[in-house]
Length: 189
Image (cartoon, helix red, strand yellow):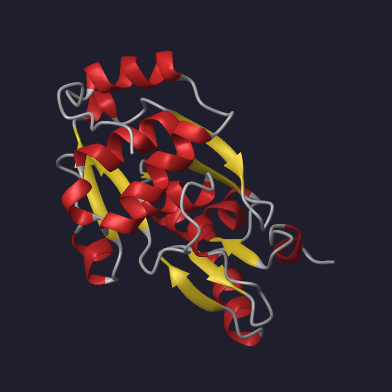
């Protein structure tokens, strides 16, 4: 196994930064990428031809300051049963989002100091660690952005959260105050 093959992760993703840190020259790296048919899936992120494309992981690599949120988090936490049609990420206000939006990513922005509230790192089904909001932050985001959700998904997510065992109502109320959604909380369906 050569030096470049050692920096390719188990799912077939190759990061330019990992190769550079391993002392591999850019010339050698780009020759390897071309010779082996790797595809650029984001800036500095390449996937082997036989890689299973993990869109959530790739989005987190493209935007390392962002946190997967809204539809993505609802689905990950089992609060809705329909896989999102569009990837969703939250980033701080002022971050350049035009590339993400042009690539079809739904982007939400918050004040920089609120970006980390409720953020957790989880392993997804591909075994990659991704940043995503916890259930309580996700419910607050759902309520704050309710006009951007289908009513069926909105109601299903609230009912599932309220009826579930994995809820922290104290944390939910803390976040609701922080995000000014206390007065917007609906009656439980």
